[in-house]
Length: 296
Ligand code: C2E
Ligand code: MG
Ligand code: MG
Ligand code: MG
Image 1: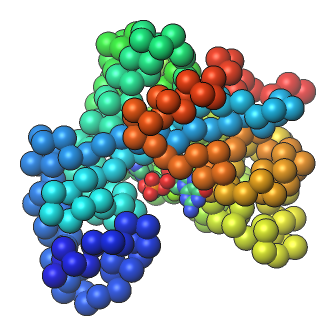
Image 2 (image 1 turned 120 degrees about the horizontal axis):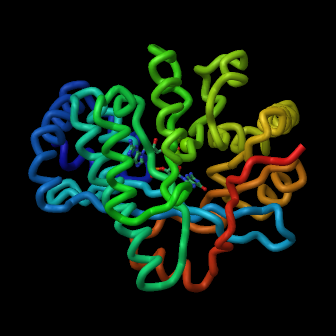
């Protein structure tokens, strides 16, 4: 059954689709049907994963990414790798993302008020959300309602969003930046944008696709490719973020190559709000602006 297929497969979610097409369709149908109740009953939870600025001698926590989790009452933990693409294709993603953004904004405010810690948090904005007419107003209001200043809520827009009607997307990104949002280009290098586009693109940080880091530690030519990506970010004077970093060796090598910010299991897995709070108290965030444009 769909339930058996999902159980225990949270970390190796690809395996979920190993079964028949029929099972997969059944599962997807069930998840779509379950969505409204899941939202109402708060089955979605927002986890946080820290980002560390590795430019100082000792790395300092400078930000975090909000990542959604679904605690399904029958199916257990379901990976966003499964339900995000599904919701994107079925008109549900904007509703879910609004929920995640609201939760994240509320946390930023709460941490400031209760803990005296100001930590910029990035949220994921789906390619599909970028076509919502109400997007800019909604995000502006969210910041106003929570008293957030510019740069406290960051937006991660995947590179793939810039394809398709890229003219419209670039304009939307421009509007968001105009009202004070910083934009990180997520999964950069995963295969869609042209280098040509980069020079005109309004962005504040490049977040390298995890695969580059993975490969760079296996093959010499991939090491050089990673180096080149970091040089590329330097050319555009934006900080470069590496994600999926798991080992001390990777941290040292990335630092050596000039990578600015690192996110990955090496520092911490994504944590539920309460655990993340403890992590923050133990790893006092820098309080500075790690996304400031580079000099030169
Ligand atoms: P992403 O935005 O590129 O997020 C990074 C993913 O890498 C996360 O997977 C994170 O848990 C994982 N990760 C971080 N460090 C490591 C590491 O050291 N090793 C490994 N193996 N993995 C690491 P997650 O949370 O499963 O999310 C997958 C994707 O789902 C995200 O990729 C993002 O595209 C999407 N997503 C997650 N939450 C949201 C959301 O609230 N809204 C939208 N629209 N998309 C979301
Ligand atoms: Mg992201
Ligand atoms: Mg990414
Ligand atoms: Mg990704």
